[in-house]
Length: 148
Image 1: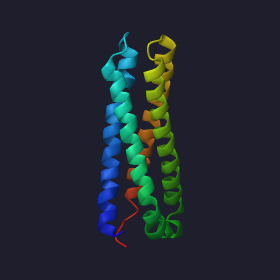
Image 2: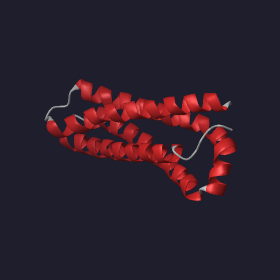
Image 3: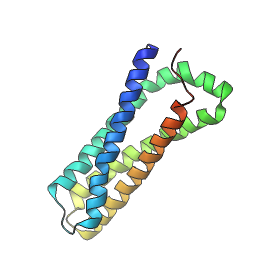
Image 4: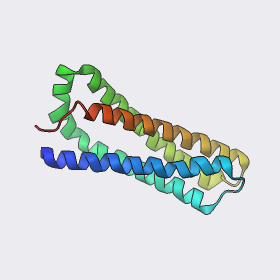
């Protein structure tokens, strides 16, 4: 993969993830502020989970190029930044997994108060992991340049 294509896909990957996190705020907020579960709340949780999973999949697709072209220099010059990237990847997986779990729980058990509480906890966890992932992504990108 060329450095230009890598940089383009990397930015799309990040923007899709940010969009997913913005969308994820809808069910997080409405599950706390409304008594009744609306179909839109369920749909936004599912769409956010889908977008987060898509962003994760794109990141997974980019990883071999990152490992070959960017990571060696980071490990040599800035090992803490390289470690931050690996932390970011693990948090991204957690965000996607928690968002999927939250959407499934909301779809299956959202009619009950306990189901909504469980879904809310999962979705909040996904949002927190996702925001932390994004912050680490910006931090790493400020050091890791793709001009190989």
